[in-house]
Amino acid sequence: ETGVTQSPTHLIKTRGQQVTLRCSSQSGHNTVSWYQQALGQGPQFIFQYYREEENGRGNFPPRFSGLQFPNYSSELDVNALELDDSALYLCASSVTGNYGYTFGSGTRLTVV
Amino acid sequence: AQSVSQHNHHVILSEAASLELGCNYSYGGTVNLFWYVQYPGQHLQLLLKYFSGDPLVKGIKGFEAEFIKSKFSFNLRKPSVQWSDTAEYFCAVIGGSGNTGKLIFGQGTTLQVKP
Image (cartoon, rainbow over all chains, first blue to last red; front, top):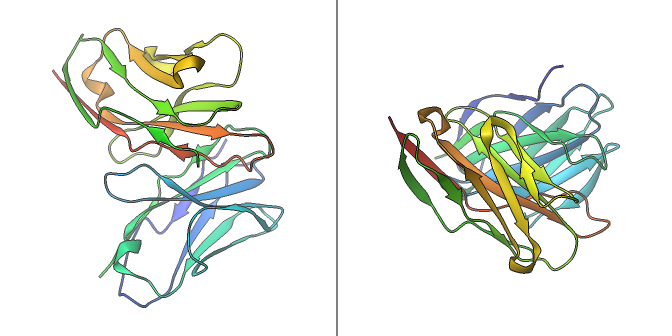
């Protein structure tokens, strides 16, 4: 079985710019969650997508948005980047109702 | 709000020493508990999980954890660590009925095992 694939692996952006991160979920999984992991911290839940709709959101501003596609892949978009957005962004896929999450290796975003 | 607390931020052990990492959560209802490991440069991997039943849970690579409901704790243990256990360890919880399956992670514990 394939795992969760995230792209790109590393990214450097300037404050105020916009960024799109991508995630291909594991085969057979229909739910995608996104997490932000700041340096030295545990991952924090951003939001989850199921059936192409947002299905739960953490304490993140609206400039963090996402999409899920019919093939269950997903995008995380962040507008008006701030320095504090620098972090590792993790994607996790699962089957709804089954808490067997598979995590990707993440995208390391640096905002300068 | 639910939270997870990991008391040990950085642990240094010699090979063959025993390991216990503390984890406490703040939620009074039904919880699902997890321990994840993140090896350097790799993705988060599930070590073990507790949903119900026997409170002593065995996971991969010789790890185990004990759920003590009265103490809101889910400590991770390993009798004898190896150099390859050097990694970041995260405790996580999903709590409440009808929730979206949002994982709430602790801050993490960095384990360094000296050969």
